[in-house]
Length: 347
Image (cartoon, rainbow, N blue to C red):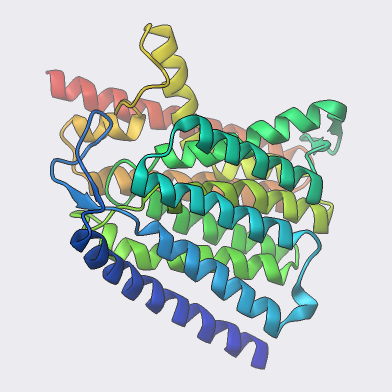
């Protein structure tokens, strides 16, 4: 009972500190000219302070470390690698917010931190499939895990393009992983998930349309890295081979958005690695819909696919295939909504 009360106090404090800290960061960044100037990739029209995601990082890491000190019996193997690597990822993101670090350096740091996690925590080597069987990845587990980590870091960063989007899907993904952690009886990862969720909720208090501050690379890359490594930690301590598929379902809407947009630009002969605003959620915004509607859509999509991930773990056997198909229909619906919105704008 005391443990539950203490955790509740920590979470409430984290929510308050996140909201208060992001507000102070908005003032600090404005006074020092740390602004996101509208450009080719931007969906906003006025210069806006950036760096609110740094508060998400501080609240999560500090709160998580405090819980680890208070509840040492909850600490799991390999967590120190996540803590170190996530802070490094956030720091290079913060430097990019301040000084626009060259992409080769950002990718280099992300790659090294991915290797740290693979050596310290592990890789995806076995993946379950519907029906109770599993696939052994063998040596392919190493490049796939590397691509998973680096890919999610950047895919989440791409989602920070309209008010409320990155914070909203972060809050939902945190709740989903909290439910998975609770089901698998992993209290330390439950706390990490809840801290992510409440810190994103506090940030949303300032980032919901009209946003007074943006997340920036410090927060978006940290969250992408966390949602990539959290399932690896969960797999390590639980041994549940359903985790890799479930982890993919949790992040399915924004992985699908980033992948579809990348392939679409290649198909159309457009430069895929230059700044742009043709992600699905941005196309919805340019169709005339307010940012809050696009953010709400992605929150709803993340909630649906996240619940599919939870049920995939809970429901064993061939029924898990049903949830995979339902998530597929959700992703098709994601495309249809954007296409219909663009068609209405043209007509």
